[in-house]
Length: 476
Ligand code: GLN
Image 1: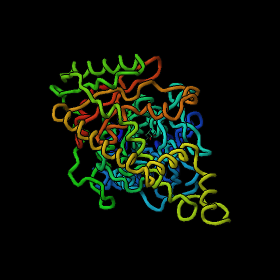
Image 2 (image 1 turned 90 degrees about the vertical axis):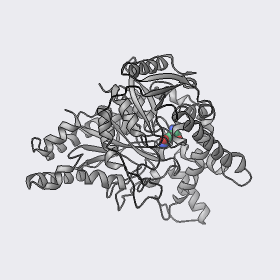
Image 3 (image 1 turned 60 degrees about the vertical axis):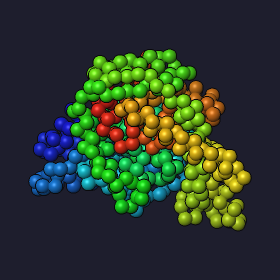
């Protein structure tokens, strides 16, 4: 049963929402024992919401008529604040933190009748591409098709549960440099990252403010579009949200793609798994069969310099954002002793994982006086050049195509052998659309053995509708 049919059945009272939600929670618990997709399953909240919906249905409340997510299970990346539910961004330093408020996206999901089922596992604060950089004491999510492999990251739990759930479910993820696309690709689901500013970041724990975006993961394009439709739009609490009307994104699933123009990014096929390249090319063929027109294009600067630009900007912002976790106002505290520097050092040494520490050091260095011009300022200039290279192409093309990741989901034993630089290089295709704030969608296009392969479509700012239109071809 798809989400649309499910919502209708809930509205008509054909499915008992409380019983259904109890089953959903049971299934999540079972899956979690084997796969570690949740840091917390929010059973109490989910059941309270279900009971309230049941009451409204019984009373025949008119308000339920327009609720687009009525009864649909929504999982939430741990970095997004849910009132009263432990929210840690996957970090030990935030253990025990229960927000006193809902992030704007959560408020909108609740208003639309979505049921919050839990907080999904992730790389600590979003620092990673494989969800192996979870915080101290957190469990690593495992690929739904092979437990010895990664789910992708940093929204790994979101990708895994989206694939594994047998019930109608959509995930809220977050991307700074590819954290929605990567897990979508490795888990064989659709991952939709919107234009920067299209969705409010109010209540999202920052990784890098100029890059962070909340987006959606679904088993179908329709699901990903539906949740985006609910969460998108201007927010008084968030000054970077775009004050322009949103679209009915789900309606784009009904449009054909005749004569849409696709640019195939030539450079993105170099140095990747052969099978990945082959399947993505077949994906392009499929778009052509439906009437799209494609040709090869070059995107030199973003592919050559995206990684270095991204990692300088992202770590610079991350290192300032993490300064607040010093064990006093924010985050876990330890026994107060020594002077402030000693205390601050102790709290952070004991409670940040290795990758968070690496990024604090890297980011602090890149923006230090004496180095700032050579690194941080230079990266911001290259970023502007990357944006204009994309903008030129979007005058001619509706969307650009590349593989999402250069490989299929790697084994944990292979990830262990990667150097930090090799690790960062995995994001070669995903970082640049993020640097430019462009919407992108990863769609499953094929397999290598039993591992999924993802293709990424990138469109111009605020053209999420086009991505949904094109991505819809790849629904099973
Ligand atoms: N892999 C990238 C990084 O480690 C992107 C992560 C993200 O989008 N949160 O920064």
